[in-house]
Image (cartoon, rainbow, N blue to C red; front, side, top):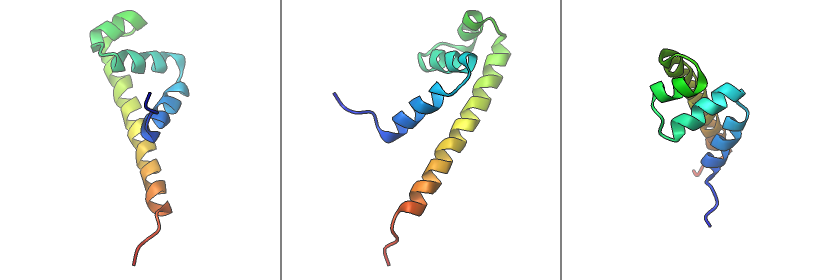
Length: 79
């Protein structure tokens, strides 16, 4: 069995640190549920699902961008 990539491990760790509602929302989204289905399951509006997902994605992009910057600065420069 293949080990998850470093990015996948980072994603799983980041998801585990979300609030219970946000974690459920992300996992349902990753399972392929549409906004209306997620809203019905979690008892929130579909527009709230869209807003929360957009904010979570934005935070996640920041996490990965920060990680990429750290990786870039750790690489030795070849002259």
